[in-house]
Image 1: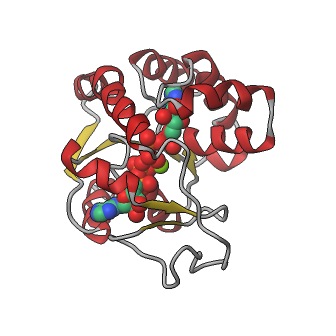
Image 2 (image 1 turned 180 degrees about the horizontal axis):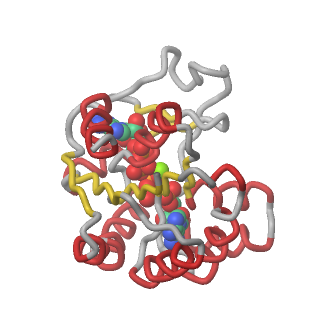
Image 3 (image 1 turned 60 degrees about the vertical axis):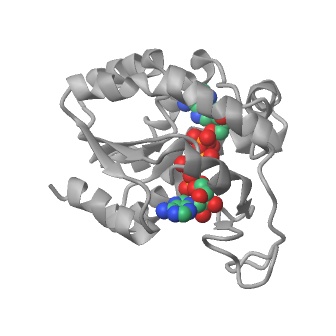
Length: 213
Ligand code: AP5
Ligand code: MG
């Protein structure tokens, strides 16, 4: 099952992918998470990517296409994957199609999680993250103890790009560079749009209905 979660910043791609991996036994591949790990490790690629990420801009296609090309060849992707945050440009989508063609594979479903821009700013400015991968929201999904992770007890932090100025740029870039993928995958007859404005459990049920056909 080769899946893509498509949606604007804050749509809930990461939240839903984490719920799906247990049910589907396939990995979540988040280019954002991979890039943030490279920033944390201080690699040359990470240092270069950080400039783009902090400003809310997309990292150059060549960098993220290279990351995905390597990642999809790993053993845990043999039975499928959930792409979260890739592709994000038509050129990235075309490269992915080429990679999958070579491997004799194809995307089964592109699930577009639709959330109006008016909801996204509040979702992102209120998000608190943990280094263990857990994610909370100060209003919609608060941790039991303010600022502390429920799962591992570590101190929560906010992402550097979850500031209003960077979020505004990310939303503009989504509409200009990523939203055209709705037509790209619509033409390939693999796109399914679902409303992303209910509770996370309701959205998960809608995604699993698509996946289970
Ligand atoms: P990335 O990490 O992919 O960020 P993003 O696409 O901007 O999306 P987010 O992770 O912010 O949102 P999400 O949809 O995962 O929402 P979440 O589930 O966390 O990319 C970051 C940067 O890396 C990019 O800007 C770019 O620079 C670079 N990059 C990455 N991939 C790239 C690529 N392919 N090409 C070029 N550059 C790339 O939810 C958000 C919040 O809302 C949480 O607090 C959550 O608790 C809450 N929430 C979730 N669901 C609901 C709900 N149903 N109701 C209420 N609240 C909810
Ligand atoms: Mg995410």
